[in-house]
Length: 169
Length: 427
Image 1: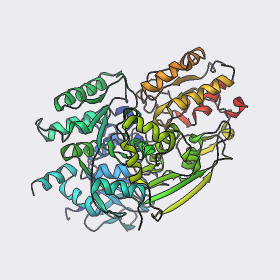
Image 2 (image 1 turned 135 degrees about the horizontal axis):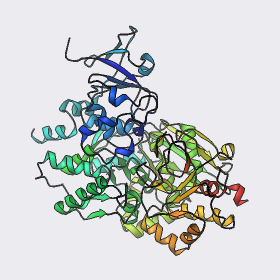
Image 3 (image 1 turned 90 degrees about the vertical axis):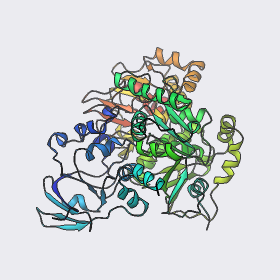
Image 4 (image 1 turned 180 degrees about the vertical axis):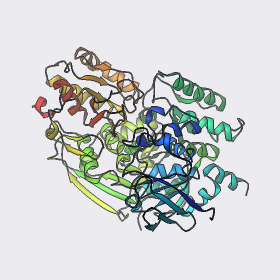
């Protein structure tokens, strides 16, 4: 298997998932990113057990405007450090998108993706080609990775790493 | 081709004749963080620089303590200490400690926000500073830390849209109701990544408080920034705080007549009625009269959206019109001014005494009930009314629900103990 191919179980979320549902304001005082996964989706009705049950490699799939709401970077860390390798969504909210890019955390824009999966379906994502497959149903579609400057920042591993690489050029 | 306000602001800050969709690096005029996010920035900066780093310009960095002010958990008190000590080491003097209030409002009052500025902050409602023509944006801690190195950060030049508002508000109706209406009309993604210019006769005569309210919930429509060109009393107030330089700045960001907008909307507020964002989303909007009579357990008036003096005065006027009736014993009522300056004015006008007599808890300035980690958190099953900007399920307590309304509707509801159209009391 190519190392750009990811396989995992799907966790499916709706439209307009705000940051309080991803990482509740109750835990904002946390400053250690590695402590954040234990609170992931605690307030999302029906997904309260996400933090306990998520396995490294599982993939978050969501509708439009994922991560709307707060500027808290916790909402990116809590998935990144839980081992969720990529988030697929119809679209991402502005600040969530920035925070993901700035952390080199992969997100794919895939309009309609939330409708193609049910919880627990097996997903295969080819990060190079953008092909997203539902191995449970056999359906597939295409997702777009970030482009332009964001692609360069992502490739560097995040904004700080990008700035460091520019400084040494 | 002419330029919109955001295009002019980004042109100044980046030195580039940037077009929509371009990615540019902008000089940051002010990089701010709160007692939420701020400690994360410090920890990250110290880690990257092995505690040897110096920020690019201590004069252009500010910290505001408003998440928990004063801190009531050891964790937050420690986080605040991290910021105080870092500021001392770095020579950062703009540290607005627990006795000041909500960050954006404090920065405005201290004359630190100029039209055309590019400002970062760890608060998704930073963009309410668009109420004076600044491009302020909420970002995560990595963005703030990145800006501390060289005083720049990256932006995508957004599409611009225009919302033109005319007409005068009827009795019991205010800018918050228009905003709620707009959120309902456009939905949670209605301003997706865009900059929105608010203009028209209603905006031109609006107070700064009303302009802040309007710009404060662009985030709830997934917009990047809502911008208003300062004029009249607002411009004078701003010049009094930030100096006459604001006049040139306003001229420099005036949109060109042939600027290009992806959408232009116009509204007349004359027939608008009191509106409510119903549980559990800001864009679940109904008329207050259509949900009137619904049970509530708590009312909260305050926040960066509606915590200015004018907002609290509007609530006071409803209380006055009721003959200074006590609030319903079944409805805990909390009022939180946005800043100490606002609180002093409320004290001077005698509002605070009247509120206390009515059985209301009047608190120190802070962000208060925007999080569940604050006084007034709701237990499961309770229903609250609030003038804050978000009512996602469980936001201020697991299993609780919240209606978002204007200060007038909130106060009317507190008095009757059920959701109440303020016109029922104002007559």
